[in-house]
Image 1: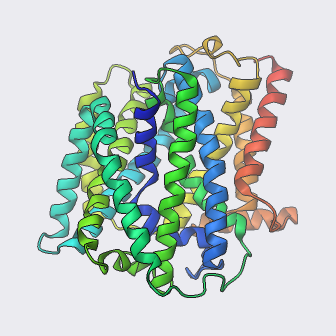
Image 2 (image 1 turned 180 degrees about the vertical axis):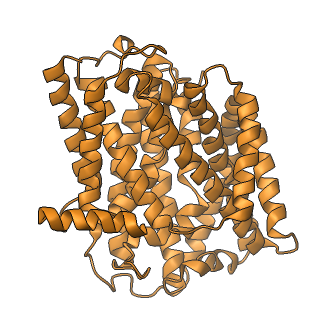
Length: 421
């Protein structure tokens, strides 16, 4: 079983990611041409608000696992029914494979910045192999992260803050506050990407309080710290996200401390791959997790070898639109609905379908898309056309995440009472 500090170290490590540096521009609400619309200070504020809200949502998602001892996708049998739980499971597997691929690409690119004497494919293969090894022994990996990696990461963060704050920073207030909630939603989406897997780890928690506190606080604090550092680095390179690593490598001993981040990034890909394997077991219960881990390690490694990071901001928007309203439905039904007592949920392979909860999820999804259709080509265009048909224009005060969460939760409670299911 995992105590509070084991879990806190795990979530804290997940909060510090190279993607927080390379993807820091997403909280500046970039427009269709990739130009930021928020000032650095506005981006920091938006990121902090989004991260805190996302951390609280992550804490909510952590509790059912601790209470029931069930992994995340198995819990969804109680929410949607056994067969209907396959739909979010497939979506979760897809987003986790996407995240795992992103992580290996980022590790390889960052390692190349440290030393380009090894070809990119060599770093990808090495990162994939390390990820697979960690995934085969998950609980041991979590404890290793607490004992050794967390301290090294904390030291590296403090060192880089001192070094970067000594540099002549530009005016951080130059720019707009327009699009504040778009930036907040981008930060929230990173947090929410862990919601569909939280119970995979908190099912091993000793108490529900430890699960909630470790997930909500441990993750939020370090993500804020990492993103602020990434935004400072972005300011030093005049907003050029392709050069965001340069300020870290340009300071004294920067290569040494940056190497800590590169090595630590493997815990992100480990969590993605492990949870993918556990999610697949909801579809194929008899599948051996270790065999799945090896197969998935190979898959994400191959994808990282042949793909490149594309529309990262669009990817985050799609993740948020799917999993924020799903959490709203889960939280409403688990904590407030007829199944508020976790052991009352039917999580068996014969659990009856609950189409009403699917409808509530869909309602939240539509609200999110109407407010923030994202930037993914034809998909965004479709929802913009829907906006025009409905004569609906998103207002600056509207948060796609908060409103979709509330609408989905309210719909779940209403449907649950009307249908008694």
